[in-house]
Structure formats: structure tokens, C-alpha cells
Length: 347
Ligand SMILES: *Cc1c(COP(=O)(O)O)cnc(C)c1O
Ligand code: SF4
View 1 (tube, protein in one colour):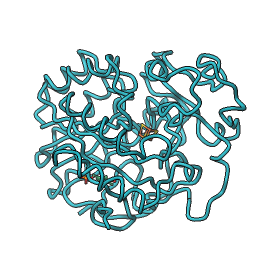
View 2 (cartoon, protein in one colour):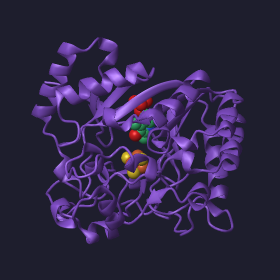
View 3 (cartoon, protein in one colour):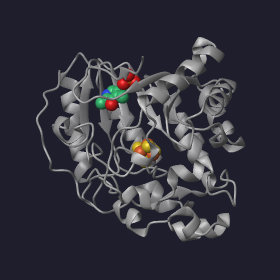
View 4 (spheres, protein in one colour):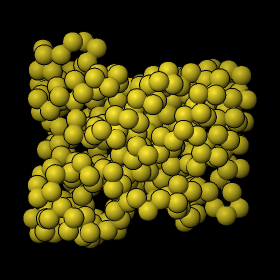
């Protein structure tokens, strides 16, 4: 077991990740998005202060799936910075999972047996307003400064993984691991492959959905050539997010024998409805993706307006269970600091 020493010395480098520098495929100005969608700041309850708290970033490929002129579009609600984010709500705190304490050094986090999270980049393809990482000091910054400082950190982390033979699976999460350039990503996999006790690599990513172009032939080759069994956990909250472009990206992954799972977050106004979740599960299975988790919202400051109560969540989940085959039913779970796994939410 990896020891858990608290440490707060995160990387503070300002530089952006490779892929972010190379692509201009993002909306980074909320006003430009509103113009594109034919909506006004007022009807959207736009808050510039919320953007200062957590940067606005949405890939164009995702924007294409938002319906213009519809303030409550379920995709738009996930990404648009609103005044409600500034309200302080009791119980909603900056680090609800107490990760700052379990992060005994930057970039490696083990809470559960046999598997550890390796944070390789703070960059994401999209900034989801409800994200529990919105207040992390590395949330908007690349760990890769000009001297490659955190790359050294990563090598240290891999040394630690080497020393713990109980670990069989590494989960790349964070930040979105596919924010790394192909070259960095390949280097990372090679480093991990040098650890004999590791069998599986799990990649948590929103890229195949929000920016499917990232699923390049080079990336597929890297994944295919790895000795690891690869599991990719997508993050899709609504069937509308799976457009033809995402379907194509997903199909490429599937053809490389990658196991595809999905996790969703139960979000008020977005998917807190049995019809919407049924549609999502149907569409996931159509695309050979197994619904894995339906997460309760982490109580992170600025996200309270997305909260679905336990009783509503349980009711929705029960209704879902009544209409879906078992393999299409995601597990309703919540993350509780200090627990040995995510906990089922049930009556
Ligand atoms: C969610 C999570 C995992 C993965 O949990 P599974 O139940 O295996 O999907 C592992 N480590 C941490 C720290 C997590 O938060
Ligand atoms: S992609 Fe995941 S890690 Fe990144 S902002 Fe969205 S929820 Fe958070």
C-alpha cells in the first residue's frame, strides 16, 4: 500500500498542454458562445465572476451538439458559467473528497485497493461546471513547465508504483489524460509498462465524446501496441452528447478491443429523469458502451444548483431498474472521503 502523506506543493506552471496549444477548436469566451447560440447573457444568468473561479472552455465539436435558442439545453447547462455558482451553500466546499490530504505527493492518489489514480495533466477538453476539480490548484495549469519539472515527478510516482506490488491497475485521470500529446502519452505508457505487476490501464476521458478528433490513428496505434489490457471509461451525461462524430471515435476504440464503460453524473435539469437516462443507456449500448456508474454530485462549492436529492435519485434509479435490462443499469454511487470504494446509494 502506498503511504499517504499530505502534501500541498502542487505544480504551479502556467503553460498549456501540447494538444491545447495546437488546436484552436475551443470556445473560451462565453459571450461568443451565446452569440453563436442566439442567446442573451441575461436569460442565461451569465456570471463573469464564475469564469474567474473556473475557466470557460468548450470544444466546438461539443457546441455543435447544443441546440441554439434553448437556454435549458442539457449540454449547455453543463458548461455555462452562471450566477448560481457564486452562491455559498452550506456543505459545499472546495475539496469535498479531501483529496488534498490523500495526495501524498502531486499526481498519485490511492484510495482503493489494487488500483491507483495517476494524474498526468490538469488539462481537460471541456470544463464542466460541476467538476469536483474546479478548485484544485492544478485545475487549470499544466504540470509540464519548460523544464519538464512534473515529468520528473511522474517518474518518481512510477517508482512508487513499482514498489507496491499489490497494484495491478493504473487509472489515468485527473485532468483528462488524452490532453497529453501522442508522444507524451506513448512515453507514459512505456514507463508504466516497465512495472511488471501492472496488468490494466484505465483511461478516464471525455475526449471521445466532446472532441472526437483526438482519437487519431497515432493514438489508436499506441493503445493497440500496449501490453496492457485497456479499459476506457467515458463520461457521458446525456444521449444528445453522442453525435455521429463521437460514434465514429467510439467505433475506432471498440475495434481495437478496448473495453468501453461510461460514467455519468446525476445533474438536476440535465439528466434527472428516467426517460433521459433510459435514452442514454439505450444509446450507450447501441455503441457497445456499458453503463457503469451514475454518480451523485460531489458537494463542491459552486455546484449546488446541480444537486439531486438522495430520495429523488433513489426514485429515479428504481424507475430505471424497472424498465432496463440489468446490464443497462448504471450503479448509483457516491464518493465518500475515507471509504474503501464508492458507496452504493440505496433506500
Ligand atoms: C473512482 C476512483 C477509482 C476507481 O474506482 P472503481 O470503483 O474501480 O471504478 C479509483 N481511485 C480513486 C481515487 C477514485 O476516485
Ligand atoms: S472532463 Fe472530467 S475532469 Fe474535466 S472538467 Fe469535466 S468532469 Fe472535470
